[in-house]
Length: 212
Image (cartoon, rainbow, N blue to C red; front, side, top):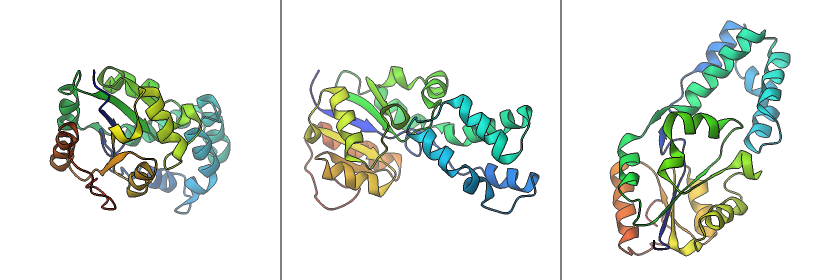
């Protein structure tokens, strides 16, 4: 296998994750002012994204901070995961399946504690790529340079041999700063074309987000 590599984000790229309005519905149900849920839970969401809190503790904090009973907590978290997991980007996933054996494939995702188990069960990303690097497992999130270093190290590739794909511009810029080629995901057609160019040794276009 060559050292040419593709690394992708999950949410907004491999998963289609439009807002579902679940937080607003819970605020209306609990008669809370808009923004209250995230204000009360902000540090818990942050802790979950870097793995400094267990999933059980998340549930306990949801109950304590929002005044929910056990069944309400389960419903609240089910709504959270429904938006988080979204639906599969079937076209891009099919493209990646066709690349196996042509290049190294990985995932680098800003995540939340519990994501690996749910995404493995639903989408089998572990069968799609060789290595998945989750922020809640390594303790740092994109755009921290250490996240990109962890992805390259996990796949045993040089940054310059790797194309990183994300739907957040600051992460794309950070990947470039880390020495990777990078592409801002806007749609499948342009992304699949950029992957093909990378595999064919397509040139970099420095400084232009989404075209590198």
